Image (cartoon, rainbow, N blue to C red; front, side, top):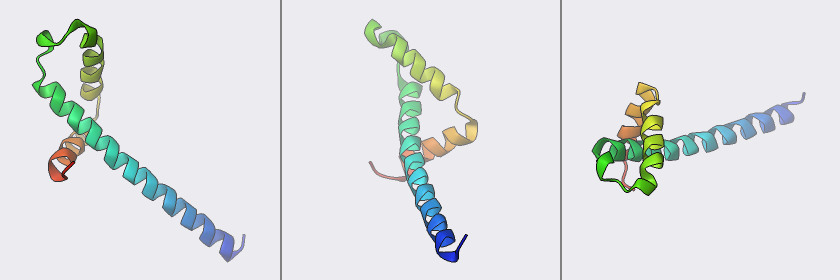
Amino acid sequence: MGASMENTGTFMLSQEIELLMAERAKLLRVAGAAAQFVAVMESRSLPEEVATEAEILAESVNALPEDTLKDALVSITATPA
């Protein structure tokens, strides 16, 4: 493999990593907002139509690894919307 192909491959990999990191940042904001919502929601006062979705959301947030959840909560306090 030539140096040009290697440089192109490295550049493409770098671009893909940048895209994935940007997507991760957006997903962390979503997870952070969801975690904050779950923390303050009163499940008994939610309409029946959204009870299942609220339960899925709460279970999904609770299933996140602690480090990821911390990063998610920091992401919603560290940067404006």
